[in-house]
Length: 230
Length: 88
Image (cartoon, rainbow over all chains, first blue to last red; front, side):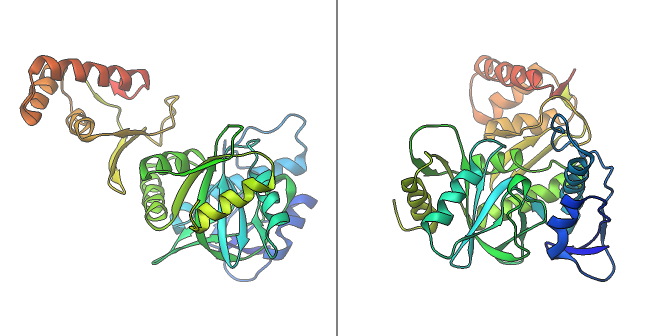
């Protein structure tokens, strides 16, 4: 079965319902450039306890996809991507830090906003600008849309009980991006990834924030990332 | 001594960064952002060298006392060592 994910033709033959269902909107035709091996152990995440064969297929396929896209000038960011007024806002952090919780606040707060991808959006620095793509790999919530949307800003979440957001310098932005993506296992691809990260920090504003689970936090992040002053 | 084989030392958006070898698992998979001095030392450490040569070169380049250069270098080297980034 051929899918088109983040603008790339991908061959994948899911046996189980989860991957089949999440990939449904990406069905395509044509010659694949990437072939997903569902047995690939990418070491991207440790498998959870009591992992079913269905979940393993999904996790390994997503890890394989994230590894294989690097040579095509694309990389994934562990993030929840929310779209408002045609622009993508990415909230990135390791699992359990409240990415999806925060973007769920946006959905309640801002009419017309939607989740592009809730776990692994793909970032594509083009000749100009940066495009964010939805993928079938959306984590637990399965919130995802098969679309490419221009990137507005990226925000990394950190621990804290206060609502606080600051723009960060490129050095910190590079380190945090590297910590929240798949690290290539050879120098050539690592350099490609660093080239891509360079373009993202050049072209997008990057922030770091701590926040509470309340609507004021969504207002704060929106105003800062939109550039309305805060 | 020298930096571990396969390391990446480059600029990303003007920042000098040192990345562990992608091919190896050395128990450290972050990156080290280095300043001008650090970058200078790392470039020298891309080839076999020793503390004395590094201190002499650093003292000359930045017009500082060799003793001070040596002290700075030892701190930097012990940081690299703790991250398994040095081969000795």
